[in-house]
Amino acid sequence: MIEEIRKSTVNFPSPHDANEDGIVAWGGDLHPLRVLNAYQNGIFPWYGKSAPILWWSPTPRLIMELDDFKLSRSLKKSMKKFQYKIDYNFKDVIHRCASIPRNDQDGTWINNEIIDTYTTLHHMGHAHSIESYQNGVLVGGLYGLAVGKVFCGESMFSDQNDASKSAYAVLVSHLKEWGYSFIDCQVPTQHLKSLGAKEISREEFIYRLDKVKMIDPTHKWEIKEKLIY
Image (cartoon, rainbow, N blue to C red; front, side, top):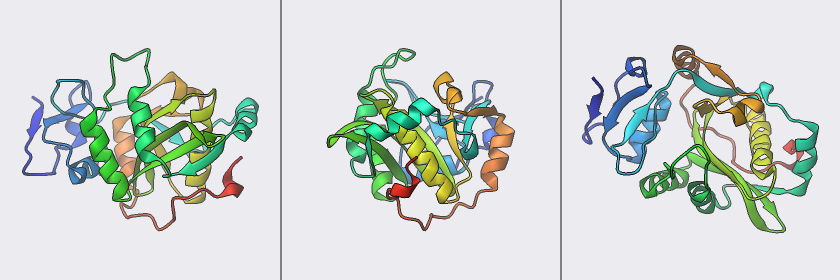
């Protein structure tokens, strides 16, 4: 039986107790401290329209080892078409991610509650956006949550070919420079697998996460030109 989370606590059941679908619990709310605690324990919220909040820790889990990222020649060439910023326009990035049509999904999980919570987490210094521009116009990007030395990717969008993949490449190069361990990609997708992401078990993911110190990073979230491929 899936446990219900009460709003009076930010604690969660063990992710090891998730059901066969990967659901750990349901209910509660999206208070920023609850969401942050969830990610620190390998759990994330994901739910559809008019559904209760569901808290997930799936197996397999998709991660990107930073050294495994595949930078193709064509992508490296495409990267020269864009200019990059970090955290310059988080609000527009998350709204664009929410509005982009996705062939494999009916609507979006990025609802107003999600947008409000992750925007608050951005103002708290936990959620970040990596953005691609052309002639001063935002044309692609991604956002996610920094949890200790792990970056938990949430969503991306692209109005120009390779704009989001280029932002992802910029993210990888900066995370390597800052000493991050890996990127949590959450659920397997062929798109991220094509870039080098791999599946691991929930047990291995939690083990890896437990080894990461949950302290706020000391680096600044800003672009270093030398780190753009």
